[in-house]
Amino acid sequence: LSSMAELGTAPAATGLGVQAAGFGMSTAESVTDAVKEAVTAAAVSAPTFGVISCTISHDPQAVAAAFAEALPGVTLHGATSCGNIIGASTAAAGVACLLFDAPAAFAASYAASATEAAAALKAKCAAPAAVLMASVPGSEEAVIAELAKVFPDVPVWGGTAADNDLNGSWRILSDAGAFAGGVSLVAVAKGALKFGASMLGPYSPTPKVATVSKAEGRKVFELDGQPALEWVHEWLGDAVEEAVKSGGLVLPQTASKPVATKKGELFVPAHLAALHPADKSVDFFSPMADGDELVVMDSADGPATGYAAALSEAYDVAKAAGGLGTPKAGLLLYCGGMAIAVGDQLKAGLSDATFCGKVAGLPLLGMTVFGEQACMPQPAGNVQRNLSLGMLLFE
Image (tube, rainbow, N blue to C red):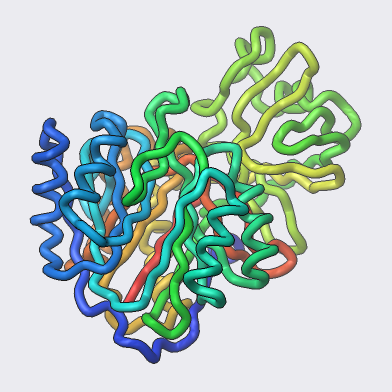
């Protein structure tokens, strides 16, 4: 796993740090009741910041409004989660919040464009230790590019809003409402607290490789000089036979078969999403460029174990990266594609004794997301990636 482990560090904290933090989750059908139960369970008497989430079984707009009403004056940031809100031994549809009492530690902005959101955040915090982002599928690399202009060399971490059926019902959540587009950004103030992050692609490379001969954005037209569809068909065979003929999404068939772009000695995992027989192209959920080397990866026993080992490593890497002693709060980002790959083993992975022991007593909000953003070592830097899981820890 180590070759695919990315980590983020923040300067040693000189501020007050996290004074209090709490997690609350509710499966109540009524949005009003669910939000009230979640805030009560979090039990933070004077929160200054909150991460909020819900599955689309609850109306995201109503959820965002209810949290804003329940937490007046509190800065809120979040996104919808695919299928479940997750945590140690738990995975269920519902409404959740992770609340912080951390004075001067966070600043946030939401805007319809990355340019507006980044400028607004810059006005509130000119030189953050890190930026957290929540965007919608397809927009992530543009947000990362804008952040590179406004906050050069600042690590970026995040998870993309998700829904249950890839039908666009995902939403970004903030104290201003729920939004089908745009981006919510959070600045982690330098020195205000200890912060560590990780993002893992728990895979190993296989000998099967190809070079991108022709690509545009996330669409690949040619691999090794041949139509990309033909290369994929040869690789995956009968599993994608119908999509090869008729086109369409292949996410379940490829969820346990990551492909990674190689950046130096680093691997950036990508999820092969759709096939297009009309022009023999294929789509990924992360960007591709002419000349990229694609490496087929091996997920080994990850899907069968619910990626239990990766969950524990994500915690360890994040804790070490930030030099944390006793983390006060955590955010778990679990790729929706990995959740597809593990299927019924999702709960088993989250219930793993080693993982549960590490996060025992930690207020932890877990979200199943449709894209992961992480700061990798150079030459990769801040990237949009897929089929990854990571942890953000705060102290």
